[in-house]
Image (cartoon, rainbow over all chains, first blue to last red; front, side):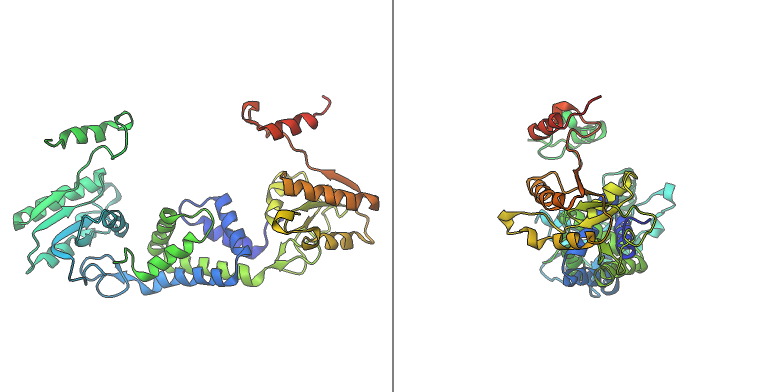
Length: 199
Length: 199
């Protein structure tokens, strides 16, 4: 005997496919949908399909965009001489939140990972070189993740870009602000020492 | 400048309306939808609306049902002489999981709460009395929640049902199995002592 009526069981099943949603959370969400107005369910359903139907990639930076150019690339007030290279579109938010960066982005859509068969040709690196041609890009900030893959990608890119005469920088790795040295892992601590600055 | 393209921002907004989903989780879910096949998004969207469009309440027990009778009420192998009274439909699952109960359910859709203006007339109590007429119900198990409201509802129902000559029982409250007395709150510990059994 099924515990739930079929449509409810199916909704629970679909919620469970989402990352970080287990059986209990899926049930809670499904029962919430059951209790809520049809209008709310309709809005979520529409939003789900709109994301699939109305979003593409920016033709310049490969960020997610609802038009040919993303809001960053079409904004003349942004500094078009600095490009911040990131692995995935969701890296934009933490960087924008700092309000410290006013340049453009370039989304690689991945990182070099020989183990998973991802070579430089699978990333949007050609597109980065192409967009630099004929423009006055002064600096490329490599903001790939501080992981083995992200680091490898940064090293690869810096070797590729430096000969073009552009300044290539890498975001700093170290102890997170507000943290305690007690909880720092060996690699982070060593990076933190290595990247020490004069005071 | 918005951090996300409009359809993505809207999906994040809609995910955030769900219980237990904050900004970060909503972003993770929305980016997952963005990466996944359109088919997956379509299935979730359809499941959301199906739940609103194709589910109603069982005409006998008020459980969620995709037909006039829920799977429990239309199953002749269930014990129709025992009715377990619960507050909400989601209470069915923990009870069914025990595989110890083979009777029927009755869903009240709430509990008596004078503070929130919910009196006995707002619950499906009339329907419980109506379904007992002309049948041979032997026992009513009151499985409302062990809260002030659930307890008040149980007391109210037992006063109503006992004169009808039916056996009325209440699920046991006490220390959860696998727990430690150290973590038991005062009220639970006192219930646990009160409900002690001969060994």
